Image (cartoon, rainbow over all chains, first blue to last red; front, top):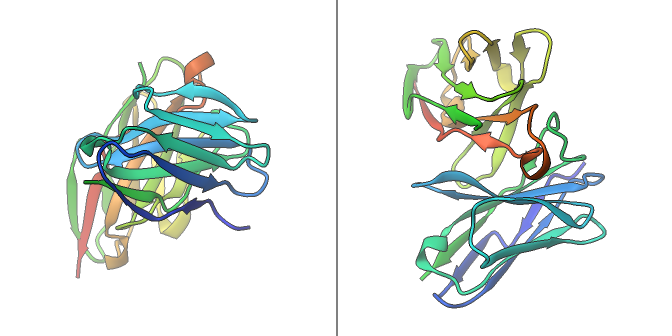
Length: 114
Length: 118
C-alpha cells in the first residue's frame, strides 16, 4: 500500500501571499489530520477532517483553513503568510480517526516564508 | 488536560549499549500511547503503541516500550543501539475520555534527540 503523500515537498513564499498544501492519505483511510512542526513550538495540531467534515481544530488563527474531498484527499490553505508560518507541515491519515487508531504521517511540506 | 513530557532533550549512547528514551503523560481517562521516530527532513514514522493489555509493547526495528500506570510513564527501550537509530523520537498520547472537539487528537512531547556513537 502506498503511504501518505504530500505535495509540494518544498515551497518558498513571501509575506502576504497565500499557499495551498495537498495531502493524499493511505488508500481506505478516511481521517486526515494536519500538524505544524517548528523548532520553537514543536508539533502542533492544526485540524482533522473525516468524511469531508472538520471534526477538530487546534488553536491557530483563521488564516489557516482546510478541506477534505470525497476521495479523502485533503488540502490546507494559509492566507496572508507571515514569517512565523515558516515550518514543516505534516499530514497524517488513519482509518477512522478513532482514539485507538494509528496515525501515519507523510514526508511533510517545508514552507519557507521570506 | 492531556499532556506529554519528554524530560531529556538529548540522549547519547554508545553503539551496542541499551538505550532508553523517557516519556511521562497526563490524561484524565485511560491513555493511548504512541512512539514515533523522525529522521532529518522526513515525516514521522510509527514505531509502536499501547492501547490495552500487556504492559510491554514490542514494535518496529527492535524497539519496545513499557507502560507503567502508577508512574504514568511509557519509556522507549532497545537492548542494543545502532548508529542508524540516531534520530528524533516523539512520544504522543490520546485520552480515552476525550469527546467532541478533542476526540482523536494526538498530543506530542517536545521530542528527544537520540545520538548513537560508534
